Length: 112
Image (cartoon, rainbow, N blue to C red; front, side):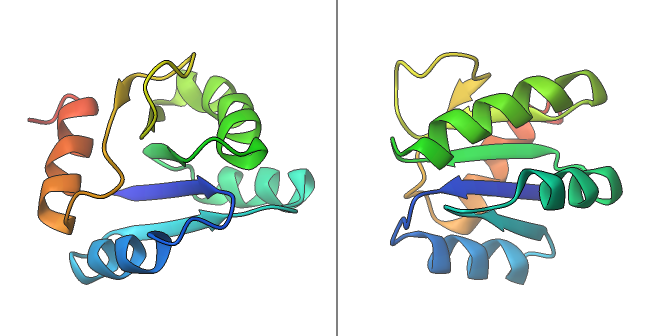
């Protein structure tokens, strides 16, 4: 599974990345200042299965919304760890340990 974390300096990112990569998943980190052109090329080659918005910053909300809507037709699903965020498929706590986070993503993708 490919997971793209859209964040604005979220301190949980290192742990989340490490735990998911240890479970064999590809993790893409999109932070402040990420180039739209770079992401376009990256997502053409490696479309994420899940876009996870971490927090309430502009990268986590605005960029993730834009990419989530653009990639939705190809099967990408978007989750947020904040309730009330528009255009998300589900709320998934970004503090969950790796196995539970993986299970939540599989549920959102309809694979569990």
